Length: 355
Image (cartoon, rainbow, N blue to C red; front, side, top):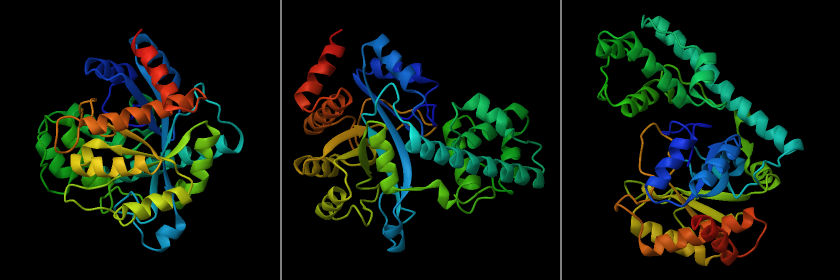
């Protein structure tokens, strides 16, 4: 799960862990963009609730060869751009030296890209006479835990419009260049998503293209994750709502072979993206190919969704998927403890859950 240390629907880490426990989830992983800052709070919060903690991180990397070939990997809109997660990182954090410098640099560049976007957004708000200006420093201080994303700008603008009061619909129409707000103003997540889509994404009045230096090569990201004690992990998109797959993922055998060649032995899925049939097929095949397979709920949007995992076409996971996901969690737990077997991970998890 993403937390407020990058962006999240959760109020804070306690909120995330309370919801997990209330829904009967016992093994919970923190996974934030470019950040390990929440690890200690995650570990302490899990200990207080009898939950087993896993420690992760997420990057957006770039494979130059895939980009040149026009190959869509796991970002369907940007050839070559590749999301990479790290699983089972060390806590306390052990990263130092050049890997730590690289992580700090890419995080700073990501923050600066949003700062420049904020400046452009303010220029747009002034040009249309919205009567609102956003304070980047205040947003960073009050709405983030150090990592600032474009979603924070959307949230800050939505809050500023509401604070102004009056005719909110007219104010949004002004901000959107005369086009009315489609979302229900009472649905904060929907409003923020619309702000982001209309103003902050490509084609929007405040869009700032990401600088190439914001993306490390895939190999560099793998080295950072390994230096932090973790397992480089490839996040699969698999089938989208229309049943489509990216160029990289459409041929599963080819994808598995290439991932092995690139040094990956771990994969993950955000289960709400996929149908049960496709998820069973992909996850089962990859586990048989020797990959660690884990599942997540993401929570990287303003919409609050259940923590307990489900697929796109079912309210939960099938028994097959539950077994695969648990074996993956055990493998990551064992790795964190310096052990090398799923059985050892299972024993660690069970001891925690029985307390």
